[in-house]
Image (tube, rainbow, N blue to C red):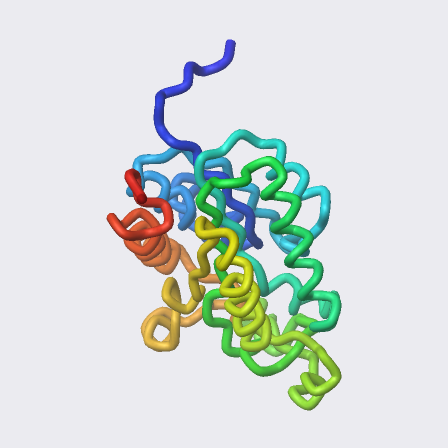
Length: 231
């Protein structure tokens, strides 16, 4: 029997393994779950480990899923897989957002870029295992690309953040409910100094707590994109 609707707003979120909950203490302590609890909303988490790749089927799923609030967190998996170049990235983002807007033309839609990940800030992918720590029982990752390849259109997190901000600014002229959040506001350089990424890619449990609180503060604040009574 379906659970009765509790009357709370529904937040639909899509992202990478960081949103999926890699290294979180429990499913209820992933950063999106914590942010939803603090924001007083019901979460539908479409975090796909390794697969936040601007796939059209994901956009169609989001289009067809009832929701009051929507967010998409984009960047790291595109770099991990060295999936596309800047020329393909820009229209792919536009197409992804266009599809979501077909089903949710006026819902608050927040585009979030990647949290800080030093190995890929200025170095393209692909991401490769770093086996040097296996003897210690730890797996870490490294960037296998070359910074010089940015000139040929390869993506880094810095390139993606700049382009996402530009796309949102351009589209928001006709879509006032479209917003952008730099992921480094959730986890940035000072956070990395205090709570480094254990495998150089994924935040630990303590960082999930911090990210959830910061997202809630940014998104659900009285003037935030997910405010309860936003004008």
